Structure formats: C-alpha cells, structure tokens
Length: 293
Picture 1 (cartoon, one colour):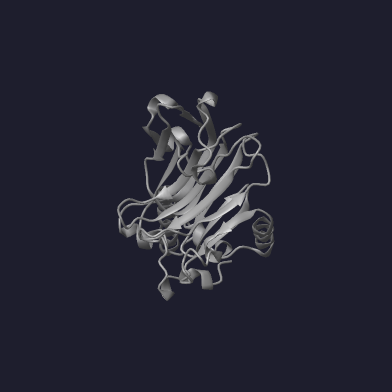
Picture 2: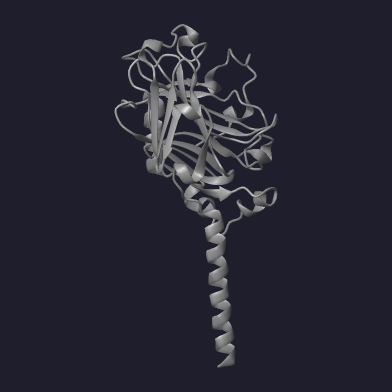
C-alpha cells in the first residue's frame, strides 16, 4: 500500500512539474498583452486583439513584443493599406539584436492602385541576409484580413500565407551553413515610408494625398518558447512533449503542403535569390545547392 501511494505521489508531482513547464513555454496572448508601441505612438492604436498602424507625412508607427522567443509559431492576421500604396512598407518580422543578429522577415511592398502587392521574404543568420524571395498574392490583401505565419523550429523555418507554405529554409548547420537557433528574437511590426526603393526601385513615390495610410492587424498569436538567455538554446530545442514544434510532424512539410507550396512558387513567385546568378557573380550561396523542401 505504501509503495502504491509513493508511486501515485510521484506521478502527481511529475504531472504538476510538466504542467508548470508547459505553461512557461507555451505563450498565447493578444496584441495588448504581448506588445507595446515603440515609435509613432500618436499614429498607432492598440486595443485587445487589434492593432492599427498609421502613416502620414510626419511619422509612421511600430510595435514589438515584450518577450523574445526561440522556436515556435508566430501568427498574425493583417489587412494591408488599400488603394495607392506605392512606396509604403508594412513589415512583420522576427529579429534579435546586434551586428550578428538573426532575422526572419515578411515585408509587404505597396504599389500603385490596381497593381498587386509584393510579399518580400528574407532570412538573416549571424548578420548575413541577401536571401530574398518575393511573391505576388493570389487574392486582394487589402480587402480583408489574411493570416501570415512564421513557423520556426530546430529543423526548418516555414513562411505561411493562410496556412499555405510559400517558402522553407532548412537547417544545414552541420554543413557549415548558419541557421537561426542560438539567439532569441522579438516580433516586430511597422508601417513606414520606403519610397526610395520599395516600389519599382523607388520610381513610384508615396502619394500623400491619400494619407493617412492604415494597416490593420488582429489575432496575434506568439505560440512560442520564451527566450531566457543561453539556457534556452537547449531547453527550447529539446525533444520533449511540451516543445510541440520539435515533433516529427514539423520536421518536414507533408506531401499535401509541398503541393500547395509548389503551386504558389510556380504561379506567384517573382524573385528567388538562388536563381540570381548575375547578382552573386556565379558564387551562389551554399544553401542554394541543398534540398530546401
């Protein structure tokens, strides 16, 4: 009887500790709980599950998360600036700090009325970027909210649009290719004037007669592992049930998801750095020779 009670107590303690562990690494909160305005406070409205970023000739606006993360899923629903949005960039990305920073980007490059937005994606590892891939969208991103998600785990980074993957960057660190797995990254979002480069290389400028410009966001969900310093490098990557992003399901896209991504890349991709031989003078980045999917 005593042995059975001891085993039962041990099981309860184990379940209790597991619950505590799960609660410390499973973050799920809306904008007002997760983020704060970093600049352009007079041009931003954050309330509950909603965030509005505003841009006029005096200022844009931006926000960032209170916490940094290492691995998980960052989900955000965005309704982009409608009408003539030439020169205007809506950014949504993860980034660490410093000259050797890591970064995972979604940037939405505005355009003149009637022309499609360009979805600009990039990834930096240890301060090195130049890994741009760009896409048109298969819907009007200004007519309604759409889900833009970054999934990031020890094996791969995947960019999703409405649950459809558009890009993958896999971990080839064991072959000398840097991967973002040792720096916590905060989530940032901003609306700003980039008309020196954003639309047709800066040929189309922002039309301020249409200001103020407004980008709307809701349903921000950082379901990710909080960064607590160097100890998180192993904790967030460990293969335990609480770290759901490390499960086999997330190590590689399913056959169905690969089909979706191939459809997007075949029909809507407009730039891939791995095909820009002229840009790199024939010295292509090493990951371009690896299987990414």
